[in-house]
Length: 113
Length: 113
Image (cartoon, rainbow over all chains, first blue to last red; front, side, top):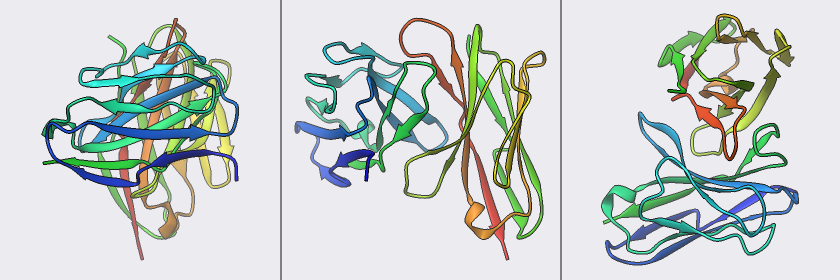
């Protein structure tokens, strides 16, 4: 089934540890995104990539990094996790940066202690 | 500042009843408006996408309207079902370079029997 796959589904992490959330899509979409969703704040954009080889900062990029080595994969890395990064993380993709339908993964629930 | 405001924040209705969710935006220049449904513990799923020239669009029992002059949209749910219990998110796309999606915080709908 075509779509977006995120891993892990959930993770408990000690503060200061490094963590990479994986995201893979098989729809050959150019644009990919990472969002975090927190209660009362809605979805906020962390980083995005309009095409392979390019990335950009979203609304809340601090403490996170991304790479886009190919079309399908868009990993999100927390270099040194802090408790404020406890959240649900969603990866998404679309065929166009602002016109295409946005497809979301099922989310990765991260708890930083 | 580009913003999307949704109301009400939460809503409880009886199964079989209709309801209307509101979305007001101050996004400019406007490209399109989307409604997403997010079930608990899942990623958001697209319901409708409307461009400037579209006043209404339906998807089964869901009907979205758009008034680009007043910058308002509504999502009407007809003959609600228990499975309609979810968060409904309004997203407005601005026509600009890079990523241009502005998310509302969502309306949480609970349908009870």
